[in-house]
Image (cartoon, rainbow, N blue to C red; front, side, top):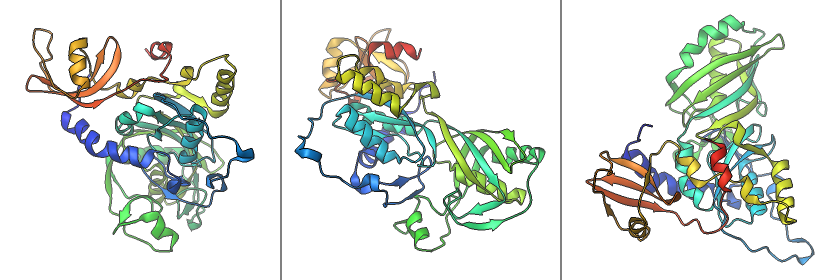
Length: 377
């Protein structure tokens, strides 16, 4: 396992982590958010996000400490913010946030962090994503998906050979211009706000990495199915737009499903109906919500683990550095996640013979069932 550099991780803990927790925690001001991966557009007219009064003067349920990850198989039509609200209610959790917005028109993996898992959100957001998406040829739309208005059209339809010949141009490190309807800031304003006001802005190309892009299906119905594995910041809608332009037939996304987010695979996903059924069984004493949780440290699969003694754990818990001595002391530097007696304790940095705590976890409350860790081995 390759150890990431300390600069990458610690920078996230001081900046991205604060932003992720601030922006991903349930906030009624952000209701209706629409993005693919790291940002698309927002609409605020969804009646599901209108705060409703409690019925029949029902008392507000007490919130509790819940720690772990739930990888929701998000249904089409639901915003990521609304999904977080539902899980927060089902688990009666004090804190919740998601690790990478998924567009309402898309289905698939939406990792939702509960409690102390929110401290690990940046590690998931930096991971690879895999999408399966369908492109409808013949029309380019201002939103680059089915919800927009048609801006260009063509009677041409590409052949499978023409598509495959083009894909190497969109593989590897490429420059990509974000969609007009995106969360990119332009002079302090979001691009999607300017686009809704009828303004056309010049968005600068940004480097993104496409690890893999393949044509899966190509039929006679004017549509093609692709799979893409990409890094942070990639816009799948922009891929459809740019491929269609080069082919001269134009195109837009008409279906999208996310099948991988960082360490979370499709087998980790749980449909909302199944999760609600589990909650009902738990309420009647026939099960436990812990069975739906993945451990907090699941998000840290790419980070080396380091076990410490209880005495050293006590120092780290107080925010104090620990000297690394003896033949078992690591001879490298970087970020590790620290465990004591098999339990997650902290994120720490190794440097100059010391183990310096950066994030300490308090996992008192509901956590994942012990068997959930073994399921993923």
